[in-house]
Amino acid sequence: MKPRPATVRIAAGQGFWGDWLEAPYRQVTGGPVDYLMMDYLAEVTMSILQKQKSRDPSLGYAKDFIPQMERILPIVAERRIKITANAGGVNPRGCAQAVAETARRLGLGGKLRIGVVTGDDLLGRLDGLLARGHELRNLDTGRPLSDVRDRVVSANAYLGAWPVVEALRGGADIVVTGRVTDTGLTLAPLIHAFGWRPDAWDLLAAGTVAGHTIECGAQCSGGNCLADWEQIPDLANVGYPIVEAAPEGTFEITKHPGTGGRISVAGVTEQLVYEMGNPAEYITPDCIADFTTIRLQQTAKDRVQVSGVTGRPATDKLKVSIGYFYGFKAVGTLVYAWPDAYKKAQAADRILRQRLADLGLTFESLLTEFVGADATHGPLARASTPLDQLPEVQLRIGVRSPEKAAVERFTREIAPLILNGPPSVTGFAGGRPKPEEIVAYWPALLDKRTVEPCVEVVDV
Amino acid sequence: MNQRAGRRKKVPLVELAHARSGDKGDTANVGLIALKPEYYPILVKHVTAARVARHFKGMISGPVERYELPNLHALNFLLHGALDGGGTISLKTDAQGKVFSTALLRLEVEVAR
Image (cartoon, rainbow over all chains, first blue to last red; front, side):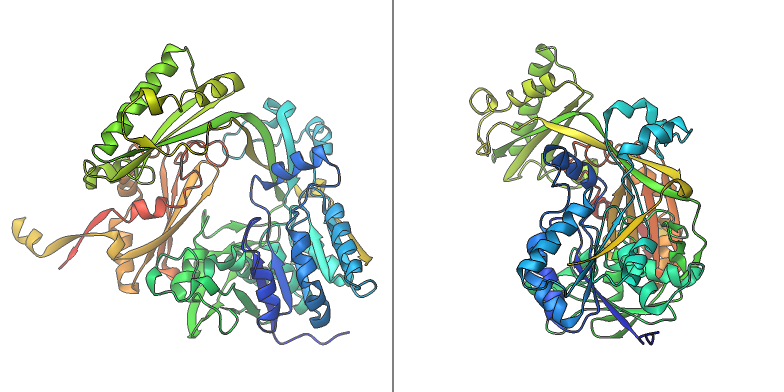
């Protein structure tokens, strides 16, 4: 048996699909790392990928991942860095195949093994599950899935770290998954490297906190950080975070030397509370982590130690992320200039609303915001800011409806206001807004026993 | 009353705390973090769930929940019904509640001079 390492370094390379293309390369070349963790999936990403797959069965994964691999695979292979990525979306096998083809083209045939984790995709099993009494009730509204069954476009269970661990144990250098939790992609390498046991709840919770800390990439290393934001150095050259973990469940958050950004207690704390629910119960498929036990300490410049994390046994449920067709929406904007910018935008809004009413159009929602005045702080901003001298205001008006025709008609009512509404208006270069199909998110729970992850490891 | 008021002043939270927010469906969360550990008790005392619900009157349709993280000198607020349906449904600029945190920092609390 191989000796257990004293520390494991896991670098975050991607915090969402669309994150900085330079980050993975910088993470594998900027200093020593053992693993590269790449998180691609947000709540609604799976339904976007499912749509792509329905148009072309070879698609359905995060396409960006392939050129990323092309760029870093030679380095990764040489330095024996392993990769965990949920880039597989709704087609992990297709994604793995594309990675394998890329690797062979780079002359890496026979030098890499790819692990594929599937079994999260429940779309083809939904009717069977419903028939057997799994209601998949919406966690927010309590409604049973049968209410929208005919409109479901994707359904994926959140798998945890263990299938990824199995792939790593099988010798995989690159593990491509479907809907594995963001935190599982970091926890799995720690379980694998340190031999953590399935009931070592405090350790699993510590690894989960490590995963949560780096799952949004630079959002814990100086990006989007409010505390003392102007003093954060060199964000142009921001260093993405690295977890440096020890077998007993403590870890440090750091970044490569010579990079920008900042690793501080304030910045790490901001990331810890991001998307937080009940902090004592951060529920994952692997454990329940208690964020009220976390201890943070600045141990050196750009180095924060995380310790003290405790956890409890995992529940017997898995969260399921379901995407279903909801309706249509469109958003139109116009910009009004001083003098009276705000009053002109308000007048244009009144005129537009009257015209929509005169046309007999009704919407499930009709929302007006005045960007520059109240779009983000609403009445709080209107109460504290002098609005009569604003240099410009953007009128932003959106509609939502089950009927595409109503939304379509709305999109044709924006441009006319340029010539037949209030004066000093501009900013319509983008043309008429397009009605957009809404795929909404339906969170549910499912018995763990009903989901069987599948792990394959293949040679390139 | 006036004498007491003379020894106290109103301070917006932005001078005492920093914050970050995110979303879960139609719920926005705001993590409010004391800029110095000694400010944390002020946050616990003054920034109650009821006070935050009043602050956001007209901006959220559901209740406010508060959780304490003394270890991080932070409070976590869940603002239900804050995002016009949330996620892809929402028509708001801030559909994912990313800057709800900054709106909370406008709230004023009374502290000793």
